[in-house]
Image (cartoon, rainbow, N blue to C red; front, side):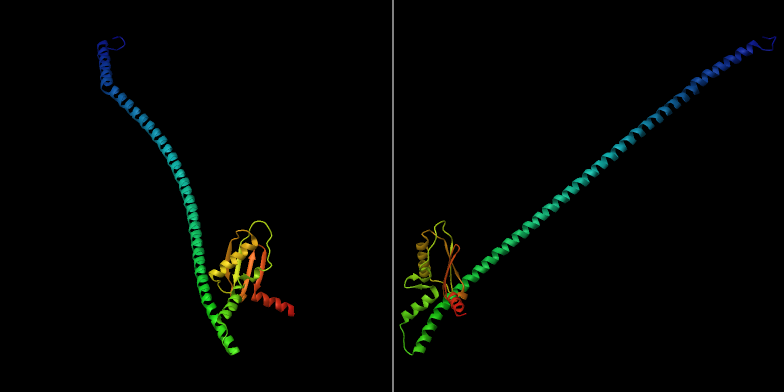
Length: 248
């Protein structure tokens, strides 16, 4: 070794120093650096994993949020549709109720008008009778039998002559189901006259025929009786029309 200029002692000392330095560096620097690098690598890996998980969670959250929004929009659309349908139904019900109430009010008003008109015409019947008697007495110049005059006037308005309904004379009804009957008079009939008409109609039909009474001043006097498709016209207006046709 000395021949080639190497001192063995120095070589051993330097080698030992190097080994000691390596051991010291390994113990004091290399391992901590490696540990620090490993810890950093693990932290970076953990951070990347956390970021991946967070990204997946955010993507899932966005999908869930989108799903919730879509469901909310669909539900809102259904609610709006249901509300619209209910509103339309409610509006229709309100309109129908108002129409029914208006019809009822109209019917009630018309019934009241009819009752009031019949009452006025009933009062007018007595006044017309008195006026006719007075005019007859003035024209003739002497007092007439008031009872007879009253009877003639009642016959004119009611079509009932000597206890019988003149329009029913010779009337016949075919068999079958009883049809509703309508009796039209120029002025309201008294309860007694209505009973007489009912008796005559039932006697002719032989059935329990429902009968309604109606007032129509345009027929002037007498009666018009409708039973099913049959019309028996003994009104003054009808007689005048017949007379007019015969004259032409």
